[in-house]
Length: 402
Image 1 (cartoon, rainbow, N blue to C red):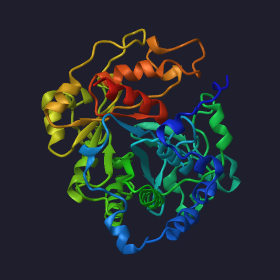
Image 2: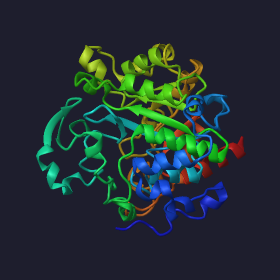
Image 3: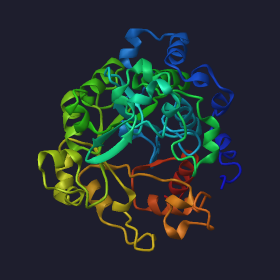
Image 4: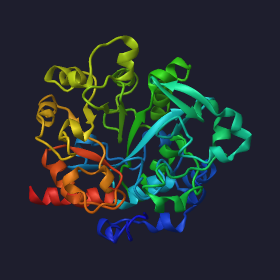
């Protein structure tokens, strides 16, 4: 089934968005290449190396000054564009998202690029490149066997010959219109883009940056944290009030980053019965259930400023898929000074709690506003959303009721 009509309604006008820049294909978005981004940055007046070190357009007030609740564009605007592309990032920003997320994995030659996974089989056209057919392989990543193509087997120059595509085309068929339009961005290109947009808009452009599989990559000699810290320092985002969150499902990665930079940090938390992979490798017996206890949260607060739990840790679902009674996690985390950025809100029925689904088509939109009202009522500080326009309107409703 195709998605419903008008997936991005006149919300852009309501939110003061400049979506025409995306739809019209600006110099940055038309090709999405490193050269296009760099040219756009260079063309903007005042983009000197000295300016870059200070960070552009920032008010320096830190994360406590962000709107409440904060809407984080999950991999950009991935409900409307292929994830982790400049098309997705730009649209999320134009729709009004307060923060834009990137996931980082390395190339063979050590560059940090934005992909949700190092397996790029489903998010690029690599399978259509016969010159890379021999690169297909099977690897064990964090204990899971995966067959495909992996960023760590490509140089950046090779990766830049690929084009991005929609990750879940059966669910988001309209997003496939944009397959091949953008390439795989480097994180440095994203930092340049954020500076350019910050200068243009006269305000900070906030980023939410995740280190993916850091223990796995460190074993390959491709440690993520040091590379990330160098880029943050180069672009002036290494301070406690810098417009960036650093996040990881591995607490050890966040602890390492805490020793390298002062940027605000968030520990991501998966299902209660799971263990962070660095815990598995080190033999630490604790599970996520242990980390969300008052004692576990106190430990996290010793090196991080927030947590990013799955929504299920706050509002568990019962056997029928309906939301159950709220846990004490929001109250307990706030008591220890931690902010909460849970994940992930999506509009499609397939991703919604059962009571908010509408009709029988899993790909059709359900009552996303109803679900968001329930989420925001818990007192969370923000959340990740594939559909920033929907989440922003729900956040405005929440603010108006306070």
